[in-house]
Image (cartoon, rainbow, N blue to C red; front, top):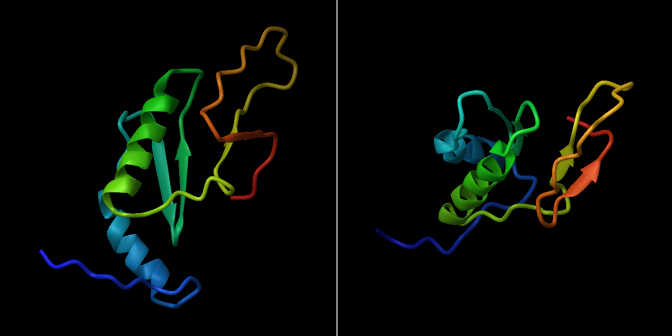
Length: 106
């Protein structure tokens, strides 16, 4: 295997296409979770308050490392959806270095 020491310039026309090909092997750990891949963005949806988020995020992190990609921690956010009038709500623990937000643009 040959080592390629070049990369694609951010914002280039071919960058998103190459990323789509590259991320074709990125999959969820659990079948109840959903991963949405669009251009160079990836959205992970983990329903319910489960421990599945840690495992899914670890899977994405390991995939990125094995493909020599860097996750942009500044753009990585966690949002928890819940009913607005719930009396008792237990917020799941945050993943290290991931900001909790109350709204997000997708």
